Picture 1 (cartoon, rainbow over the protein chains, first blue to last red):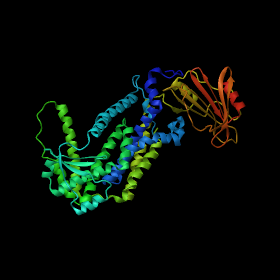
Picture 2 (cartoon, one colour):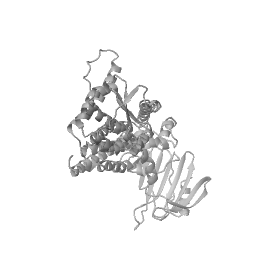
Picture 3 (cartoon, rainbow over the protein chains, first blue to last red):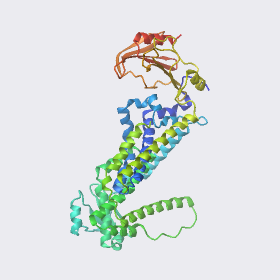
Picture 4 (cartoon, chains in turn cyan, brown):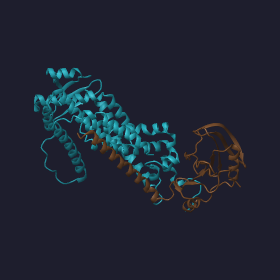
Length: 342
Length: 178
């Protein structure tokens, strides 16, 4: 094969995008998050980290780092774009992107497909529900009363240290429900059926868990993490890691509730009553695909709840000595390796 | 929790495996596709592999430089590009790259590398055998004098960068055009 000095016209459009600033940013952010995610996983396994607060910080490294790394590296090391630097790197994404198969660029096409699917998942599973929720949030019309969880002097003392103590409303509802709203009118809503089913200490634990969500929703680090995650809407690794961090958030709130009530078993029992009813018999056959997808989601949710209950029943994981050591190690290492991922 | 020291060891071992795996992954495309940017043993090997029809080479070399290039890098995709490195070869001279000639089908081609001009003191348009060339005179990162001349030859942009006087640099550039 002979080459002229011209760009190949058939490769121009896609290749042109991947050589432009947005294309380079998207590609490098993707590979940077992949590497940061693997580094995070290595750290979790190496130090056997079980403390949910530490795990959450570790999972947030691959979420936050790729937002900044490409522009930062361009600023501090403009030579990163040069041919010589690329030849000496640990991994050069351009090599894979330029691979040709039957006149096409399969890696480029695959990456565009992955970015598109992830953007749609972000749009329909996260952005639209959040926007809808923010318009619909507020006091439900069926709220019929309040629960005073502050009667207990110990809890009242603990609550006094919090930046916010939301009101707790009871909602006339037959299903077991407990949830919180955030913002200026932060509140916790409990269904009437749940109030009658849970014991007083179980209810207190469940409410304390929801209050923790309200308190932590104002945590600047988490707010910033969500905003940065939204900037990486196209990045599947960020999507996955953010969801893992969100799952850890439930465990962090469990720990908060336990620290307020001093009652691990109460929260474990409340979770069991709330989310783990006896499993229903398998449904009849038919429309298999949709049923299976729903079953998988339910199974996944159930496993998550079971892991929280097991954790609560087993006792805490005081990894306080590693509180910042592990996330800092992951962040520093990810930045250093990612500098050589172009 | 395992001891911190063991954790550090396991973490370091995991990172080493990750870096090695990435390096191995980085080599696969070079095996699968011959026209990606890589270093070649000599000029003929590069031409035989990539089949780039016309490469502009100088017929005049200042003292301490001579043909063939001591290093050659090239690619065929996404556009052809050739980088020729010339080391000083005179007796008693440090073996360092003193001249780099690169030509590429893309205007954004920025090889960087062993020779860079970090501070430009003077820039002028220079008529190079009927072409309009840009001549830049400045210094490298270590303060050594450095000059660069660049012009477009149909679809290819040619740049000569060297630790030479502007006069010598222009003679090299002119010798590349017939």
